[in-house]
Length: 114
Image (cartoon, rainbow, N blue to C red; front, side, top):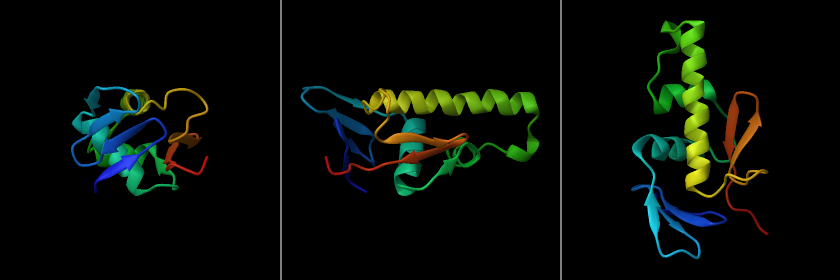
């Protein structure tokens, strides 16, 4: 898959290494964040539901949960997306790359022309 250039960093989509623009250091996405990011990138420009994220990234069984379970598990999606945005320096609104397209959905927006 290679590397993906974003507004303020570059991400290796296979290893999860992140190189921040104008910094000598790098960081790395953990397995969950890398899987989350790769799913969003593969579906660039298209909406991905919380349920699809949970099923694909966390292997959640949606048919076996109570309302309380669902609420708690949805929270892990919000937390992971927040951590992903922070890692790729997309944590200031308006978000450039990991966008909340509408309630219950996220979308990845690739680097556009400035």
